[in-house]
Length: 229
Ligand code: PRP
Image 1 (cartoon, helix red, strand yellow):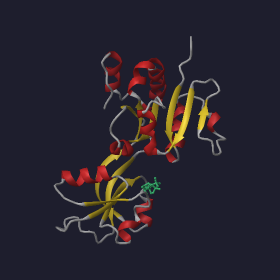
Image 2 (cartoon, protein in one colour):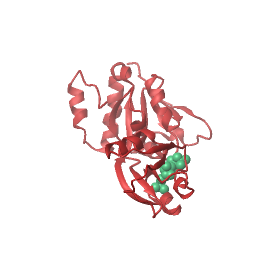
Image 3 (cartoon, helix red, strand yellow):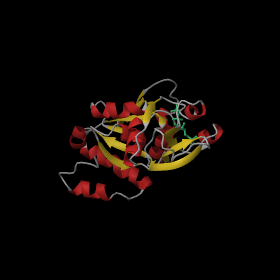
Image 4 (spheres, helix red, strand yellow):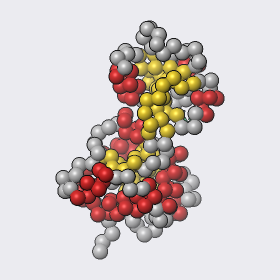
């Protein structure tokens, strides 16, 4: 039988290591990715997988355009880019949360219009909109924690994992928004075209992440399954 190769767009960096360790625990040999140096595309010796190492925000782009069949990326990124793929599995790695944080003199109940610095403008504006609060969003690309310290913003909306970055920059959490973790997303057309290979991978991963998959179970029995998005 002809092997169906799966192309997986994988978020480079912190999540990459956790994902590869998850694959290893699921019995999938990823040792061919160990000595990677600056390479960004890897094919497994048995040709079953091709991994693309890309920036988090680009994972959804590769999946949406069908260059990758599958993407592995944080829910934080999916909340900013919510369309054009099916979100299929919570991999339960890379667990962190969205929080509002600032210096200790921040007044969350102050009536003046606040400036909020963030890498996540959609998440931040949605959070304050739900609270009925009109804020000015200042989009920045990283090192968000220094924005309130330097007076660029009153507070930040950012992901917090260990809390070390906040602490080391003199910030504290004023509000938690929601928790996030790594998700597996699938190209819509490929879910049909490569269904067997994709679900075989799910079976393997679920031996590690557990059977908490009511939607998945339903999906397998339901030919009209459309994923969680
Ligand atoms: C993220 C986030 C925080 C940090 C939180 O940044 O934006 O800065 O991690 O992690 P901690 O609670 O464990 O300290 P990332 O490392 O992705 O770098 P960036 O600022 O370049 O986006």
